[in-house]
Image: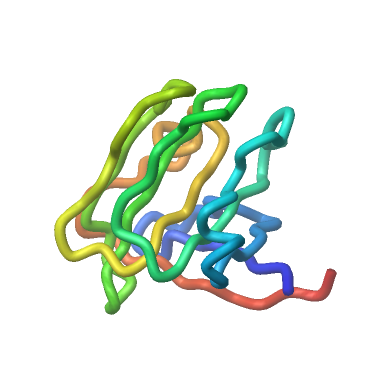
Length: 119
């Protein structure tokens, strides 16, 4: 399934085409081995409250959200091979191309909406 991730507080689109990682294996693999994330792409990982960037080739922005879809943590331009980024109370994360958080004005407390779209 392909998702769209919207920041309803700011009226912006975080990811126009977002994949999902919900199984144990998919969550563990994440973006490892991918050459890049294109503008507008993302990966939603659920359940998840922390991430690493080992074996990744590019920096990412990470948005952490709770069960009510409120942003509870933000990590901008997380470099490859970093051991940890996390947020207390997070239920899921959205991994995005570096620069997305700044470009969309996303802030702590913003509310996200996840919508399924046609592939």
